[in-house]
Amino acid sequence: MKRRFLASLALLALAACGDLPQPFRGNPGGMAGRLAVPPPYRLVVPPPEAAMLTTTESEAFAKAVAEALLKREVPAVADAPLPLDWRLKIDMRLEGNRVVPRYALFDPDGAPQGVAEGSAIPARDWARPNAALFAEVANDASRRAADLLLRAEAARKSTNPAALAAAGPPRLYLLPVRGAPGDGNQSLTARMRDSLGDYGILAQDVADGAGFAADGRVNVVPTRPRMQRVEILWIISRRDGQELGRVLQMNEIPAGLLDRHWGDIAFAAAAEAAGGVQRVIENAGGMPARDASGQRAQQPNAAPGGLALPPRAAELPRPEPAR
Image (tube, rainbow, N blue to C red):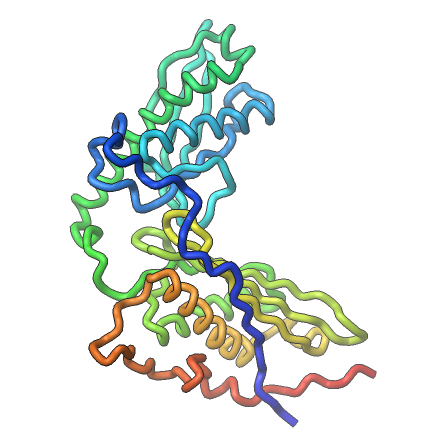
């Protein structure tokens, strides 16, 4: 006996708006005054690891830098980075009786985008930092970082004029799936890339040029004797750092069924998950406008219910009852 592999989808937290402050109207301030609009991405400031600070001090300093960047109209947070976030790495080096900051900017793919040195700080002051000193250094850091961002954005647009245009299908940075047994990571990633295309979404394996990202994670947990529950979670985020939603798939299977080859299960899981990802992006306004009739053209492999079902996913081994 065979049956269709069914994956249940649960769309969670479909928020389309972020919690970052809106641009300060009429008061752009500093370097941001030279930007036509705020950067279309978010900058993450991790706590510096080589700044001669304690863990608590590093976290406080990173937060101060992020707050100073926000005042310059640069969307920034001191938080764990999402796939499309830019990163500002900070380190300090001791030169005699001075501490010299160094700021390095990286794009979401980890490519360096520029380095700048900050104003020197008396070593005796940096050895006993306080909130006032952090605010002073953070203000200087935000000015250097905003300049690096401005130069990186100008260079990108000068070499890629199409970056100014928003036409075409939505581009999604598809991270390699993690946590699956057997060949699941590779199979799910490849099948998801194909299935997203069926929904008019261009999946790519780099962050450059992508407006969205999908991060797939697999967890397999034992349930009852000789059975396992497979959980596949897809986290969809936007370039500005906002998490848009999550697609969760769960199914109970015989223990060890996926320890080697996923085969048609990867086709079926990716096909259904792609429909969920498409709905999350559509709810966030990221899909192309509908035609005059108010409908989008039916995708070639899409089922009437909106889920792409590849032919080979129709019949799979039925899980055996526990003995």
